[in-house]
Structure formats: structure tokens, C-alpha cells
Image (tube, rainbow, N blue to C red; front, top):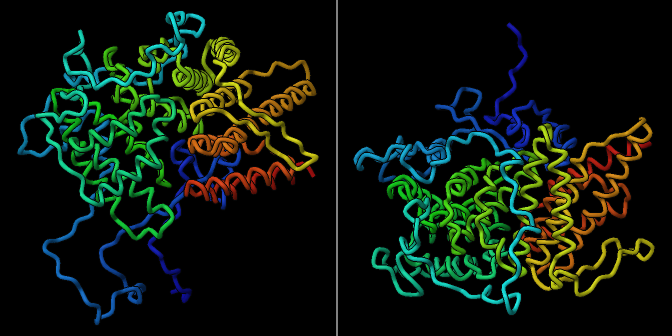
Length: 552
């Protein structure tokens, strides 16, 4: 028998990174970034898989609790619950399998109007998702170009609109600030008030970045008084935000999350197949909560996409439901961009939105959000018939958006970059966050178009030369994306957008001073927002070092 000692198991097994697991490819587990993530120019995020075992073997006796350990008496036995499958079933439309057996029989999935589009199992083709081009939009209304566009209206009454019976969303049965008889007002506790104020002051603007009516800042807190599912989603996300720089010792956010999840199951499973717009808003907030996880399973993104994909014409009523739908689309764009995969949202429904009829600046910014989504729909996956033609048409639409943009989108101050003076980013000051977001999305769309357009070259040299031309285009627009964020930090969305863009295309910075500029910017993003960018900075440094080695 061999005398060699067996290595002691730690109970932790290294697993592939998040991107490799999503793509179902083998991960080489290189640190700090695997080869697949380096090639894709994305952040390599990984975690440790913990193995739970019954008892300890002889080799692990040293890890056992001492006999003098003091134990706290429990009222009942504790159980470990993995809710991943339950949550997946909820959004797959089979939540009836997990409903309390004592409850009334659930409605058959075929009758659930919010999943009535389940026949679509793949992302819609570019031909299906062509939005009304900007040239085809109706002419501006008479009088002021902003006439009637800034009016804040009360939530519509359920059944007050013709055809609302076919809607997948139901609406609050109250108007203005009057309490609803079906949803009594429950005052916030002191802690809930603290969390709600943090959400209003520091986080709601992320969701309202292209919403003039600021539904998440003004309407969500008011309705949270009456809708616990909305209240707990805000508290969970706000608690996560407030404790983001502290050691992971608090379970407050998890407790609020669990409360919200339990209410969410009942809300989505019942109500005759209808989902209240407050529920959609709550799920979109939980999606923001989910984005903060290192291991993002996209469960709530699946939930919002399924609800939005089933929304009828009358659901786009310029209320909270539509605001949540646009937030969900931007969340889908982020995942599609970083992971380079097709959108989950069916863009066809967004054509019903009033942003294509309104003439205010926020609506114009939302049109650019839609155009970027269309561009991603064509670019991922790229090997589809007619994609080149669709990209050419999109390029014309995007150029038209930029050339026809309202005067308020023109920067109020600009100063070009000057490498000789050490000024590596231009200054681009704009009036508001939605002007900055609209322009950032324009530059990102131009990057995707440049990267997705096939290169037709007569020789290998021409192919290399044209490849360098594409790299210069990407670098130019990436400068603009980062500059818009650095020059307009009041809207933190711009910082997140630039951070995501660097995770995908940061490798184009070959000059050492540009690389340091990118690292300094990411360091600033972490200091300003609390979102950890250390892994991305290290991944970019590793990629740049490899590129320098190849060029030596």
C-alpha cells in the first residue's frame, strides 16, 4: 500500500467562469482571466462551487467544532433551500407545480395571457423586428415642439381603455394620490423609510434615465405603500446598494428579497393570467439586484422579457408598466452586449410606444436605445441571411438619428483630446443624463456596426489594412463613450455604460497612456458607484500585456 498521504479535500471545487458556463464551453481556469474571455474581451467572472457533505471523515476531524462549543437552541430544524429551479419554473410558466397544494387549482398555462407568446422559442429575426424608421415618424404637433409631452398623468384605470381586456398587464384601480380600496396603505417602518429614501435619492435615476415622468423616483415609492411586492423589491435592492462596500455580514437584503420572491410567486401565478404593472416594475428592480451578483443567472431578466413579450398595444400607455418595459430592454441590451448573444426581448412590441410619436428629448434618446437593440439583434448571431443588408439599413437609420437630433443634444461645451498636453479624453458636456445616454448608445451602435460589417478585401494586406481601419473606428467611438461618462458624472448610468463598453472593447487601447487612462477611469467608477471593477482592470492589464508580447 502506498505511504503517500492523500491530499486533504477543502470541500471547494474550482468551476468554469461564468461566460464559459453560459456558452457551455470548457474553461481553462487560468487566472485572472481564461483564454475564452480574453479572446472575447470580456471580464472573466468565476466563483467556487461548495460541496455539502454529511459529516466529517477522519482527515477532517481538525475542522470539527470543539466539544466546548456553545450551541443556540433552535425552535425548529433548519433546511437549505435552493430556489433557482423554483424561480426558473415561475418564469417558464409552470409555476403551478410549486404552488401551495392547499391553494385553489392554478390556471392552465395556455390561458395565461402574459405568456401567450410562448410559441416563439428563438430570438426574432431582424426582418421581424424592424421598427418604424425615423423618417416615417409623424410630423411634430402644431405649436411648441414639446407641446403636451411633459404632462404627468395619473395611472390609467383598468378597463378604462378600449381593448384592455386583452392586456397582459393590469393597472392600479386608483388615480392620483387617493388610496386604492383593494390595496390598503401600509406605512413604512423606519428602516423601510431609510431604504426607500436611499432608492429615491441615489438609485431611481438609473431606471428613469430616459423617462421624463420619473416613474421610478415618483410613482414607485407611492405605490410601494400599497403593493408589498414593490416595497420589498426596492428594500432588497436599496439594502444591497447601501451595504455594497461593507463586509458581507448582513442578511437584510436577502431577507427582503425572499419576502418579495414569495409574493412574486403568488402574483405571477394567479390573477387570471394578468400581471399588475407594479409586479413588472418589481421584477425589473430585482433584475438590477441580480446584476450585482458575481454569478448572474439572468432569472429575472427571463421574467421581464416574457412579460414584456406578451404585452399588448394597450399596455404601452406611457405609465409605470411602459417605464419598466424600457428599463428591462436596457437591462437586456447590457447582457447582450457583454455576453455577445441575442436579445431576449421581442422588439416588435416596443413599436407601440409613444416615444415614436413624441418629440421631446427623452423620447428621442429612447429611440436610440431601440436602434441599438435592433443593431444587437442583427449582430448576434451574425451568420444569418440578409444580415449585411439589415446592417446597412440600420447604419442609415442611426446616421439619420444623429444628423436629425434636436439642438439640445449638441454638447454645450467641447474640448478635444490633446495627447501632447496629457489630455487623453475630450470634454463633452451635455445638458442632462438622457442626452448623454442617447449619444453613448449612438457611439456603441457605430462600434457594433463597424465590428459586424463583413470585410471584403482583395488581398491579405488589404484585409489587415481594413482591419486596422475598423480598430481605429472602434477606438474613436470608445473614446466618446468614456468621455461622455467622465464629463457627465451626475448620471451614473453613463459610468455603467462606459464600464460595460470597456469590458468588451478595452483591448483596442494599445498606447500605454490610453491604457492607464482606462484603468484610472475604472478606478473612478468603483470609487464613485461602489461597483467593483478590480477584476476588469486586471483582465485588461493581462490582455494588454499579451498583446505587447505578440507585437515584440
